[in-house]
Length: 182
Length: 342
Image (cartoon, rainbow over all chains, first blue to last red):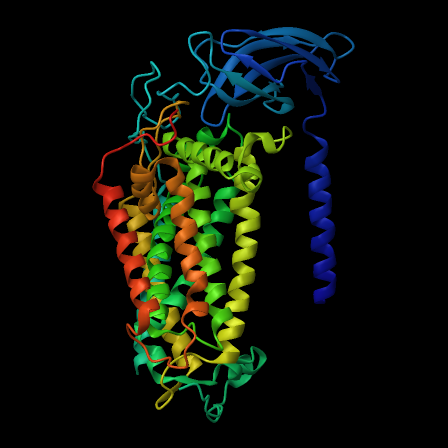
């Protein structure tokens, strides 16, 4: 088999794979009249193009945190209207409301900003949420100039690659300096 | 001193070498260009490449919105693959490039290599130093912790002080996006583009005007490049190790309306000046220093281009250097002060 045939086969395979995976996700639509909501308050969600009479899990996904915020059931037309109550303990920040089907696929998502609840203004929370970062501190909003204590969870592969890169750079560098001197 | 000798006989490169046109590296350069003092510029260029590559990687995970920035930096540190090491490498490389470009600038000044016909080479270098300074300050903002937030507040305050010139650095420039997003764009698009363009100009001029050095003994650029690459890789290994052993941290979510942090160490001399002059210090200090550096080739125009402290311009440069160093030490050891009246 010549090289051109292999190349054409690979391109067709890649296109087919991308078309197949692209068709299965996120065909439903989540909308809201609000782009931000305070922790503890409620957000009106309007869903359409969902599978008729199916139940979906709603999740609030942040960068480091995720919250299970209940279930919704689509009607026979695949639509619903739902008042989502944002838990009061949600750390303010950028989030996505996602609807998860029973097979675990995310079928729709909506960007939303969670603001500080009525206890304080924006950008006043010293303590952070969970999710690998042990940040401690007084969440009563005192400004701090020190650093957060963060658990750095590095996998064995990461350690290996980083040490390899450092070792290679050092070894090749030393060799080149010696070669230039010679 | 500036007469470039003929290039030496080319050696046989082999098939790959011929395809890569490696014989083009065999041109003659002064022998003393292989000293470490002449490698500071090349080392700076290498560190800029490291900063560009690590910056591109970090940008894949960063969210340049006030609501999401701090969380995304936490994500980079705690979750993103290689994120913590890459970010620390970016941080340590930014510190290292401050050292190499400052030393390069000081050495070129001492060599008086800014003199005719190399004025444009000098100005391109000074502009690059200015861009690196801006990259460091804009990069600090992106942390979006207390230190970053206060750096942002300084931009807003400086923008207010400088009227129409500073409008870009205020929230009033546009309502369509946040100042943080525009500073992110500045840090990742405009400033690096200008920097790379000026690097190209700087290298072009050095290649065609020659290195300002003694050509009585010659070497080849290939030898220089081999040694420079070796030194650069050793520096990279050291920075990589430092990033592993002393990873860069992140402060708490910012509290608006307070000023309690000191900036990243390359900017501490401006902080020291702000302690003396108030908020105007952040405008007056950098403008005065860079204006002096730009004016150097215009002030020192004699034919004598021997290195050393010769003439009042050299002594004035020495004075400027001492003042910046003193302000830097004052910034480190002086008290934390409020400058913005927040």
